Length: 72
Image 1 (spheres, rainbow, N blue to C red):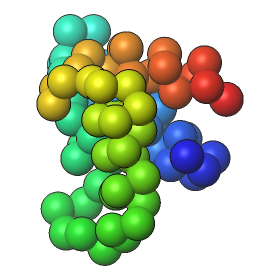
Image 2: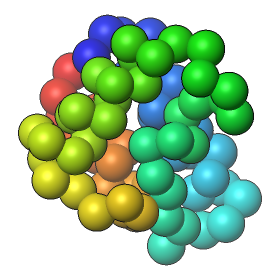
Image 3: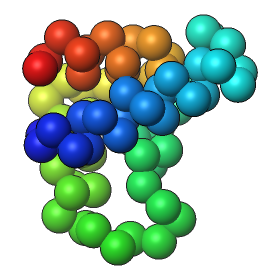
Image 4: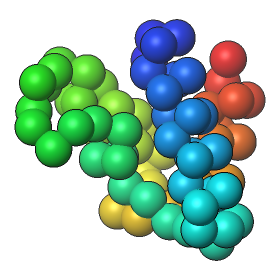
């Protein structure tokens, strides 16, 4: 994934953790607007989430942030 989406994922995770606590879960849809304005990027993140890491639909934000941070 490109640097821009990684930064956005970290920012969204941080925002959710601050608002709802460290047990908050999210799906990869949390990183996109409600409309599909970038299907290629959506598919890239979905592939990383589903195929590469075989994550559940909802995962803890702290886990996703850690995975993204360690992959830099």
